[in-house]
Image (cartoon, rainbow over all chains, first blue to last red):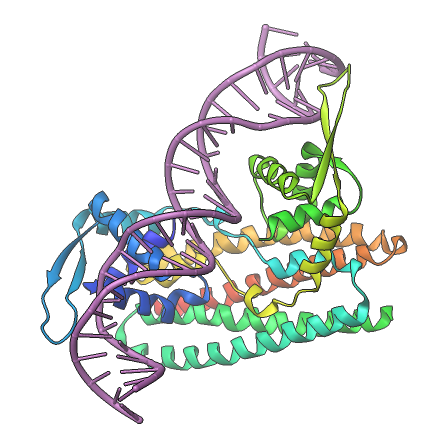
Length: 180
Length: 180
DNA sequence: TGGGTCATGTAACCTGTTACATGATTAG
DNA sequence: CTAATCATGTAACAGGTTACATGACCCA
């Protein structure tokens, strides 16, 4: 149960619409949690039924009407409860289809696998470049209180992760070269 | 669609039962892909309907009867297709509830967050120790052909990943100490 | 006599993915 | 004129999680 809480966390910064929530989500949390637009709308409905949020329809003449969501006190309590509740042990896990494929790659020939590893590495380099930009923008917000510091920490994780992937891929390519 | 393919990959090493598949899965792929027992049985049914596998009932007198699954030619083709098909770009992504929490941890006080980070680090150290053992057992199988080399590569990934997590956590704890 | 292993699952529910639908305004 | 942006979703399906059910054998 993380998407609901991710949404709560964003609503904690102030009321928004599903549309804006979706954009904000994709700009911030997307590096470590992905959600489809349709899923966000579904969760918003469920959360309103649960009483964590309320909505208000804003009538607009120039643009389509919108639904502004706000967090309730129940919602704020739930966010706090989730943040405080210690579940680190269950939370850490790797889930990576690329590694599943690699595990079975003995079926293919080494040349092909080296090539795939190179593509993987290039993807990581691209991701790394994006993350570097995120880190820079977090640094610029240092004066805005504590929150941006924590945003920055998740970005550092991304940087370290992709750097690790790149050097691991290097080593694995060397190992495969020796298998030829 | 990765669990079906994970199962196919394991069945490629020879016919097995759902029960043994479940155990093997949890001993090997579990580091980077998790599956419930019930899910494995469900997928086996679906795969049989799709014609990727066939089953044969083995009658046992001392133990409950079992269902032995074997891969069909269609299944073997599907495994090859999946392995060859290049989807690295879609496959790489981080999905980590711990980072979602961290992102919103500005809501909590620094002391608490340092403590949580330390717990995270300890969990990683435990995982790392397990992975080291896996690496050793992969090294012992070096003479068994190519497959164990690839198993080893996934284990190296695990090692590098948890080492990265541990040093990242160190840096983040230092950063939080400065915030006190 | 109680717990562990062997061996099979079903049912209900929750979450994630993909595709589709509508309709207005605005900028190039 | 066409594409993008604003703003809302629904429907169907796939995949993941949790809880429950059965029953025999073996070992301490």
